[in-house]
Length: 88
Image 1 (tube, rainbow, N blue to C red):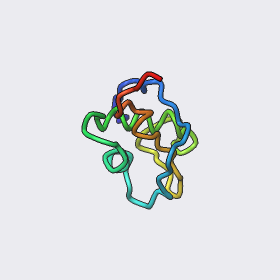
Image 2 (cartoon, helix red, strand yellow):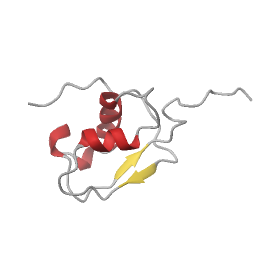
Image 3 (cartoon, rainbow, N blue to C red):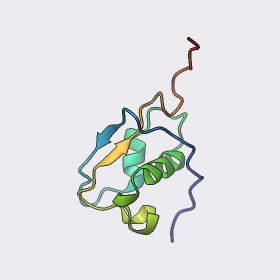
Image 4 (cartoon, rainbow, N blue to C red):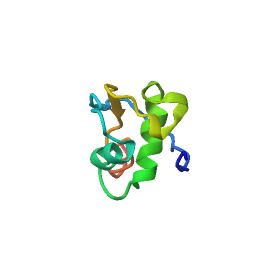
């Protein structure tokens, strides 16, 4: 069964870091847990963001089909709202 994930919030991948290549046996859940900047971003939210930003790393957008060898773009903590926005 495909896990039901929340809709991905609009997140900029400008200045993104990269995770990968994905190794055999790695799951999207494990990767999302590893790359999320803090517990303020839930694992399902992070999974949805990674799918939205890396559609080629999954077959048909299915979170269970993370491709071995894929390199995932990971938004910066600032793009995920982990830093207060300061007005100039």
